[in-house]
Image (tube, rainbow, N blue to C red):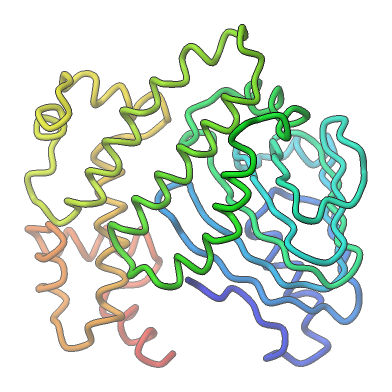
Length: 315
């Protein structure tokens, strides 16, 4: 877990701007209103590429996204939220603007919405990139007003309620990645079960399961140097072409997906194992060339491995 913001540690005059910046970093450009003085404790779990869990304990605020906001370049993702306590209202795709405590809120973040927290509230949300979800925008928009009719609804509601507590007990690594993949699959099933059964897209929904299985396997074997398309194809009984196509359909490249996972694993280990050399960490994460590792690490994180370790040791 990464604690993004705890305003109790900041001077009062800095709190409102800090809440605005923290929310804006996770959501598309929006009109943001924060009640003075800004109060929030916001935590983030990264559950794999394109999947994150946001947990917010915050005072009154409002996020409004209009068509004009959406003309800017915004991340293409969904949110499956759960207001746990307080007073939370959301207007989105013809849903009534009413209190939604304890109810799942599915939102297509490529369309306008108005999200109001009227009093101190606890809200959590899983944010999933469309490239990882593997479903068309029309599928999500179709499911938004029909969500409560899904037989998956209560299962997902309990899953979101329990997810932060489970993640706090699971060590970083493959288990978190697999939990992220499972969460995405549950959300896919929720959307599919809420859709019109004769619609055009549900027939293709199962195609995404190969991508999920491939990424879960990669998460478990991230350190293996022979993590190639040929090995993935053999392990999953498909062609090499099917492996590449599964990633290409989501705007991903297999080699870059593996590279990002290794870089983030090394990033964690450099902070957690101050006694290990940078070269040893790089080799342990499948990098044969320390210079190549350092170059890619800087490109990903903006710091050299040594500088990142020095920064992490001071925190």
